[in-house]
Amino acid sequence: MVAVTGASGYIGAWLVKLLLEKGYTVRATVRNPNDTQKTAHLRSLPNAETNLSFHKAELLDEGAFGEVFEGVDGVFHMASPFPMAAPEDPEADLIAPAVKGAESAIKAAAGTKKPIKRVVLTSSTAAVRIKQIAPGKAFEEDDWSDEERMRNFKIWYPLSKTLAEKRAWELAKELNVDLVTVNPSMVTGPIIQPSLNTSSNELLKYLDGSVKAYPNSCMVWVDVRDVALAHLIAYEHPDAAGRLFAAPHEISYKELTDFLAKEYPNAPVPRVCADPEGEKNNPPPRNPCSVVKLEKLGLQFRPVWQSFHETLESLKEKGLYTPA
Ligand SMILES: NC(=O)c1ccc[n+]([C@@H]2O[C@H](COP(=O)([O-])OP(=O)(O)OC[C@H]3O[C@@H](n4cnc5c(N)ncnc54)[C@H](OP(=O)(O)O)[C@@H]3O)[C@@H](O)[C@H]2O)c1
Image (tube, rainbow, N blue to C red):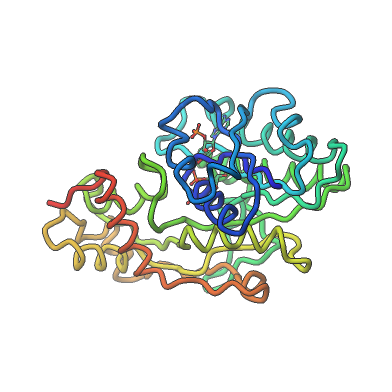
């Protein structure tokens, strides 16, 4: 039996689906188990009727996970805010829930009567990549996003993930908890949940006219099904340890918008760069993330263009995107 926090979300739903398929009994934490909007998509997953239960947990509450972790063999701590808009109060809206949630998860895992085998925490490459690095150099496990840089540039979500992951490692060491983190890049692929999530919107905003010019930069992408599998490998594989980067595909926004314009010729996809001089003279630096650890543990990442295609198909199916 395992617990999954943040089960209702985009990645959470795919992880719960995978765990149920593999025969696990899953305790899913959500803020409100009676909110059918947030739980119906999980209740209708294969095996959910018999093997899935819902438990109330709010990241800001003291001892949020004490009861729900009691008796489980493993924990997937995924809940953390990933908002579409910049938060009004970054400390209260983003940093506090991320850090307090990570603290509560590790403390609860350390305090159960039946020992917990392993905690897998969903961090992000946002906790890795926000630092200056030589062009062409790959980000490695010992790279951490630069806190001062993030505060100076008000890059709050990466700061919340960095502080939460650092606190988790600190506490895990202190309390002797077996912790492995999965650090995904921007996640794409079909959605299970009924509403739009932040990383799917990162694709949609280049199709719906809300962005007029693409940036002269790259984004790293990974399929949501590979992220779910990375979590399972992180939990089950005896050799899984440390930080596992799930970040295989570095794509420039020029490449992304070319693809979208071809897929949806009538959509208002931006065809100009926000920095035309830069685009001409300084193509965006490539800084991949090293994914060798997950590949060595057996994960073969899906090709990204198919994932983009399937994301948009699923957004259309759910009525979240209507092509022009
Ligand atoms: N998607 C990506 O591109 C990406 C990339 C790297 C890492 N991640 C990480 O992956 C995890 C899941 O992200 P996602 O993309 O699946 O986002 P999501 O769909 O927004 O899911 C976030 C989950 O966290 C829960 N949550 C947020 N604030 C909470 C609070 N105060 N108390 C309790 N639960 C709370 C949400 O519950 P509600 O449904 O009630 O809001 C939801 O279940 C996060 O840790 C995120 O940082 C995501």
